[in-house]
Amino acid sequence: MVKTARMPAVGFMLLMLVAAVWLALPMPQEFPALDQVILCEHAVERHGDDALEARRRLFDCKPQYLRWKFCPPGSKYGSSVVIWCQPPEAAICAGMYITLGGIEKTAFLRPCHEWGDCQ
Image (cartoon, rainbow, N blue to C red; front, side, top):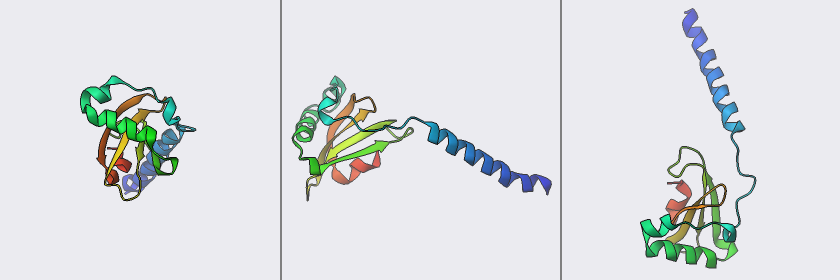
């Protein structure tokens, strides 16, 4: 019985340790400006014209339609920021994943509702 009484305390301590490490991770203070993103060839090599079209739409997007989300470590693109343009009633949206330092990871077109999932 003594062992089972200690298990919840050990679990709680482990949870507190994980929370402390998570809070200590560097988080972005602000997202890089879209016009300061360093573009890379991977997007065009992997996605071709979709990447070029995604970039064009993003740079032409009205500010009120731009969406930003921080993607945590462990998501498909790791610690990154996803930026997408979601005009009213759009079904397909242009977007890109960038590093916290402002370097493009990839850019492409996809259904609007999928951009916020960090996948």
